[in-house]
Image 1 (cartoon, rainbow, N blue to C red):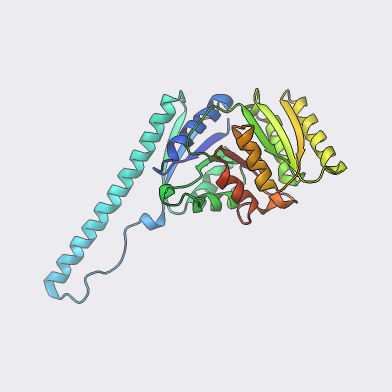
Image 2 (image 1 turned 30 degrees about the vertical axis):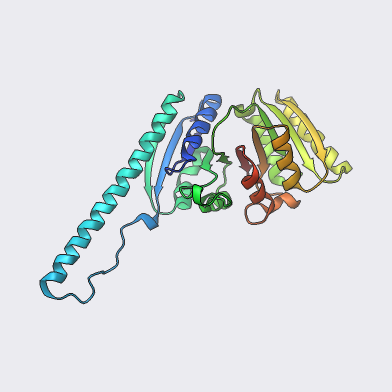
Length: 284
């Protein structure tokens, strides 16, 4: 069975981009798409007793009215979740995807992803969630948690989809970077794309050998690839390269043994995802 594409949608301005990128991946891999919307615990009906010290029948009546309001609110939230999934399905169908399933989940989003990622090819999420317009300088908290917890590649969608032809691969020689190159070599997603594998730092023999090995593996898979060693700090050098080249997508290992290893918990990958206006694939 073909591994599916998990696309997390939440009604934010990024959700349409998540769907468009999921459709692009589906068109290249022939994988089905599963759309998931998670109703978080904060969206569950409140259980506070707001009746205070009201006595006798008035108190009972108020409790009944509060219970009815809670039930109505829960129903509306569920309807909204279904509407978000229906809209997302319509976008995918417009993009030509035919194998689509939808799932409305309750609870914690990381737990929901953990339950379904076993047969997933990739997990797609927007860079920011429903508060995106109010938090332009921040990454979505769910994104950070999913990147930390997931064992599958996480595709961080940019604000809007654009055709992807030229891909930058950040390579630091770490375990996850080597796994990323191996994944790229085996995945139909990258066939026909122009790849540039780049190491940031001093031009040491070790760095040159790592790039040569990566280039050989990718070329053996029939991919078009160039390599380079850039001076400077990873977050600034890579961001500048993405912008100036320009590149359509960035791929990087989630953990490494150089400055790039900081990931979400540290500064480098946070800065990369925040500054890049292109989608980023994080590989474990």
